[in-house]
Length: 286
Length: 280
Image 1 (cartoon, rainbow over the protein chains, first blue to last red):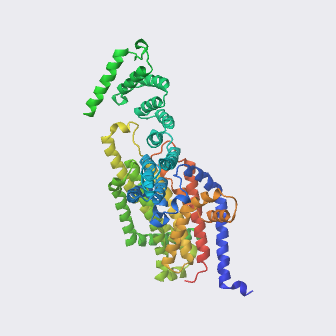
Image 2 (image 1 turned 90 degrees about the horizontal axis):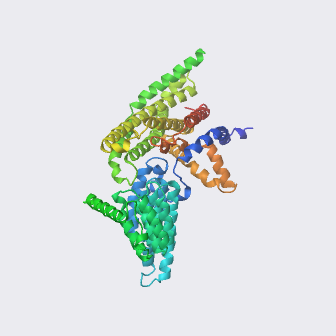
Image 3 (image 1 turned 90 degrees about the vertical axis):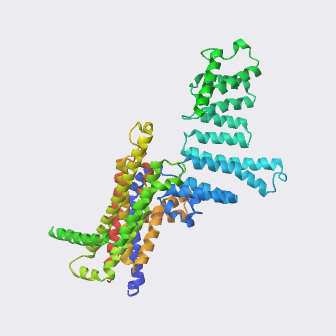
């Protein structure tokens, strides 16, 4: 009996009672918590263990805990500059994930992270392996493809958070175009971007050009005609460039003069319209 | 009935005196000043901003200051208010009178909670003032961007303040519970901070383990999530102030307030369970 009244046992008993009480309370409050949590969680940036575990020892607890996430992400971005200068690609990768986790809202982080991964890291890797004269072209391509895929993953994650941001679609298209010289896939992404609200005018124009580069001259010709017809007379739409391409395609496709594209105002008038748009643009830029 | 009234009177007296003592403390005033300075300095920190809107940046910064310094103050002030009575032996005098230990604890808690109310109110007022000033400046400069009226819903700033205050209440009650069996200030503060981190981050562990098959790890995380309240529930800054389309429903706000209130009561009762046997 006296053993049961040992101070350690008494303390353990009190501790067990406390824990048991909290378990019961937790269970009682679970329905309320789950119902509210579902709504609260939907509006919070995703945060998972894998992305923050490497950073918890770096004074980031405060940021991760819920306060100062914006400023912390900004400061980490500045710090990432020195990592980029040191060409430390492992740390760069970790930092990109961490910054995206801390503040996923600005597209600046996603786009520039993707650019670093797609354009800079392949260059570092080739240099690490001996330079452009030593590394075979096939290997260089493989590295480029590997890095581009990582950049696509970054942009894919960004699109899941900002599904209507055309810049993120354009960036994927740019990587296909500039890094991989893959016109077919680039065209797909430029088209997707051009169909989004607030897409820049050039997205559709580049799509037309990519069709042409793929040898789809007829398709490009029809697309550019539609585009020219539907674009507003905004100097930033640069309709003169589109008209120029239409004319080039007419020459390539050997379309007879009488069958050539005319805007609603006629062949000559559309030419004048395009030229005046160009003049406007030049005027504005001055 | 008169017993309850007398008890409320005693609690009010303890809370009132403790609150006066608390607001006179240099620690409270320093934390308050630092927090205000930090909220005001958010205007200058924008130079480090990469793409978030100015008003959003200031709001995030203000909410961050409220959360961080509020948590520090809640833990430190509660610990200080509790141990000051024990260390100066005034607790002996108080508890020698017909005052229950529960009344003593509730009085201490209410004082700390009132202190946090002052802190939260001041910070939210300063933040709202800065936001109002910056929004007016932007409206003058970029009138066409504000055709639909103001961007900021100022009521939400105070709603966030209210939810944070509820969270500080739970934190103060947890601190009081830890203080009820702890012997030193330092131990109470350290353990309370660890509990704060667990409460704030437990949802990440719960998410991580929810995808794996039932095992010891998942079971342990689930038990821990039942023991520690989920503080992330109060972190609704991203859904308030700017997000008019998906504003937080009133029912959810009420659920969060109720959740906070319930846990506060539970931790005060637990503190009482532990404190009633304590030799002073």
